[in-house]
Each structure stands twice: as structure tokens, then as C-alpha cells.
Length: 581
Image (cartoon, rainbow, N blue to C red; front, side, top):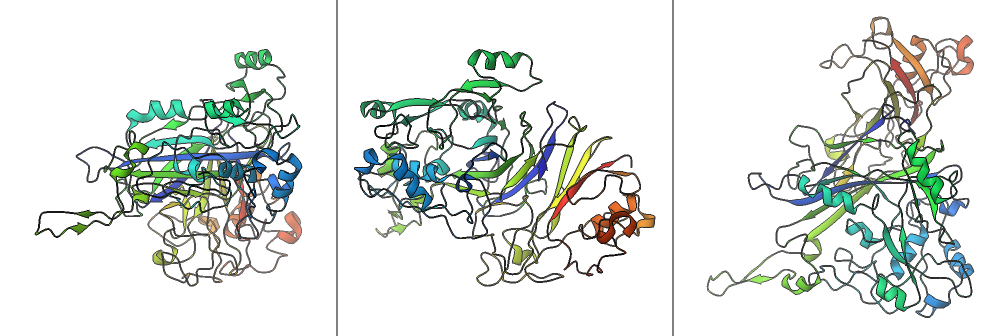
């Protein structure tokens, strides 16, 4: 759980995102050791906890069951016109399981499977399937995904291409091109600020709109009786402004919040209803961090690639469930990444034989045209953006988490060993620091580190049981404590060069600290000693004396295991203010 930013410019809540990308990025100058065409896009998607989807099938969630969500397609092309809203809902109800992870909605994938793919895209000599079961090639088929393999409910065409030409549920945080001269173009094309269109049709004999259409362009849409409709991306609804005039007028006295009147993209909606919406900011744009090719390592400055995200402020005061996605595109200089299209398809071949003039003995090049230009992604679990404690709307909040997992460097690869993130911060008087982490609690939990070329490392420790097959690394999870589990705590050390904790009596970290908020029920009036024991025990103890916290005290509770095995795996956290050095 992270606190949202406050309503004023001074009330930022910052979260450090870190990642590694295998194929390198950053720097497109001839003087660089490598020359790459790449971009990195960081995005998020949110739902309000109050006033959001009422059906559990539609709610963002992590999965207790790690199986993929199910999907049943239409049986024939005739159903494109004849399927009723009730039939569509029956198809969905039979697919979506509430104990499995859900990020994109069932409707989003159904829309993608039914919409025709963009025929103008460069596909080289890849033979994309031409029949989605309804007689034509759909947006689930791309050069990277020619057979239309399904991954959850994501849309392969939207995943592989940015900026996407149809509306989506994703909101852009930051765009990182290889050259900042591209920033103005990327920012102007972001769905945060640019209206995107798609074809809207009605269910048969109904005024209710479908969530999907076959037609991907205005001409075909109108020729087949559809409405080519523009949609506006948004942070959240602003229902207090009931007409366009009131919505526009709200921009003159709103404390920095900007509003826009438009049709929100909502795949669950049954009518096209313009509304007042909280507008999104233009995404940040900075040059992509430089990283070495084929090396999941640090940047030139000795740190992992990183971006500091200023968390959004929701004017409604509602708490939101959100997910973060990072997308990484890498293109070679074998073709122009901005001007190459379907007219160039036959100019590139898979594993071509090349005559080098050596006695008519050609050489075969190992070229996979599905990988000429590639997009990778990684995602977070669901995180909660919660409202701030009263009286702290203007304070800056620094979020400190735990990254990595138990094991040595080859066992955790392509993740990392334990570390705090950020591990070096500078705070000012009255700044707040929110400590928290989410880690593995059982050796029976699944390993979510899969074979990836892009790894988002800063979400927290991963659940894992690192047995065979061990993915890209070695099996095992060397370290203290029960196998397959993670534990973390915080104590003060005297110097960065030392590993031994200081006794509380000699510590300075806890002597001038104030508890602002606790996610574990700790009293705001807790003493400095109680705060120190809570952090050292990972929340196992809440205080020293039974007179203060009864059964949660060191006096009353069973002894803490010296390897923290009986301590909580995840620490909902405390927010502290350090009053001076």
C-alpha cells in the first residue's frame, strides 16, 4: 500500500521503480559503444475500491490460483451480428475465475480477438494466421506473435506497438526514448492527451453498445453501420460536475486539478455517455538509461535502470487498486524503425543465405524476423494507492521497500539478492518515510520469476520456491531461515562499512523519530523504543511492555525466532518522521 500524492505540488509521494533490460538501451550516437533504437514506456492502470466494478469478475486482483484465465471465442462469423448482451455475458461468466489473476478485462481480449489487425504493419516474412475462427486475421496476431498465443487477457497488438492507435485502459507515466528529440512527438501522441477512436456497434434490437467490433478504421466502421467514436483517457470520474459548462468552469479554481469533458473508455459501459473526467497529465519524457547489450546489469553510474514515479492524487479521496507495467522496445538498424511498413515485408527474410563471393559458398545468417524489432514487458502485482492521514496532505512521502529474494546471485537471477530500495535517500525536515515490504511466506508458493528479458525489480520480493527447473538461474535459495520464504527487518548500523547492528541504547536513528501512521495497529503514541522493536522484529512485536499493547508485546508474546521464521512475511509498514539527524 502506498499513500497517494497530496493535492498540492508540495505533497508528492514518490516510488522508485527499477528494472533490467537484456538487449541494452540508451544512446544513439555513433560515439557510443553500441547503437540502439529503443524506448521504454512505464504505464499504470487503476480501479477505485469504492464505486468501481461491482462484480468480482471485473476487479483487478492477484491470483490465489496461478492458472491462466479461460476464454471462449465466438463459434462462427454470424455471431458477430447476432450475439446478444445476455449471450456475451454467459460466455464471460463461464470464463472468468475470481481466484485467478485479472489485469486487463475479459472484454479487452474479446475486443482484440474480434478486431481486424492493422494490415499496414511491418511483418517481414512471418506468416501471421489469417483466420481467427471468424474468417479474417485479428489483432491477436503480430509479427512477434504470429500464431496468436494468449497471455492472460492482454492484446498482443497493443502490447507490441506504442503509441497504440485505439483507446486502452493504460495511463502513461513516462516515456524514455533513445533520443530526447523524439519527446515532443511521443508526448503529443500519448493517449493521456490525445483522443483515440474505435468502432462502436449496438447489440441486436437494443440501444446498448457492444464492447467490440470487427472494424478497425473509420471507413469500414461507417460502411458497416458502426459509429466511429472518440474516447478520452482519464484519471477518475468527476461526477460532481454534471454538464460540460460546469466541467470546464472547474478548471479555473481547482488547486491544480484539471478536468476534461469526454467519453471515457470503459469496456463495461453499455451507453456512450460524455462525462466530466479528471484529466491526465502529459507523460514525463526523459532519455532512456544507457545499458550494455546482452547484460542484465547496471547503468553507467553503477545503478540499475530506474525512474522515480510521483504517485497520482485522486481528488475524489477514493482508494484505488493499481498495476504498473513497463514496456521495452528494441529495434535494430537493419531497417528504419519509424518508416518501415508492410510494403517492406518481403525485403527481410528468415535465416537468409548470403553470397560472400567465396567460391559460390553462401553463408547462412541466423536471423529471426520475428525478433527484428521486439517488445518485452513486465508487470507488478496489484498495489493499493490509499488516502493520506489527516493533516499531512502537503508532506513529501518517500517510500522504502525491499527488492530481490532469498538466494545467492545465480539462484536469484534474473532478479537480485535482497536490498532496500531506494537504499540511499535524502530527506528534509517534515518529510515522511514509509517503510513496508511484501515477501514470500511459504515454501509452497510459486516462483513468479519467469524467463524474461525485462525484469521489474522494485515491486518487492517475489514469492518463490526455487527448485528445479530453476529458470535462468540455478536451483536453490541459499540463506538463513526456512526455504522458499523471505524475511526482512530494519535495525541501525553505525557505519555503511559495517554489518553489525547497534544496540538500541547506542542508536541515534530512533531517538528523534515520530510515528505518523501504522499499518499494523501500532499506537501513534508509541515510544521510540517500541518503534525500534517493531522494525527489528518485522512487526512481530508492537511494543516492549504488556501494559502498552497486551498480547503483542515482548513481555507477552512467544519469543521471536532468531531467523525471523515466525515473523510476518509481509510488513504493511509504518510511516515515520525523522525530526533531526
